[in-house]
Length: 63
Image (cartoon, rainbow, N blue to C red):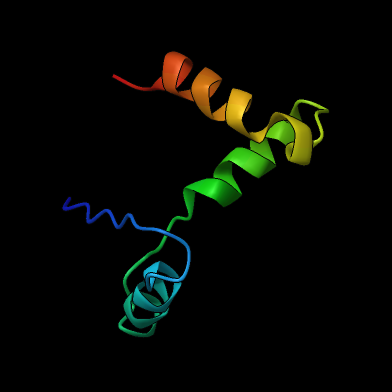
């Protein structure tokens, strides 16, 4: 499996790149959505805990 990551400042075109990929049938995962969903699953407010949860997920799941 190949993984393509996109990063950039707000307004730099990450979302547009994701739209093009989806239109081409390429699966897209938006990490912010993953982090927000995990906050909700753990009963936390994503607006208050997003950054902390991202760090926690990196510790628990990342290498």
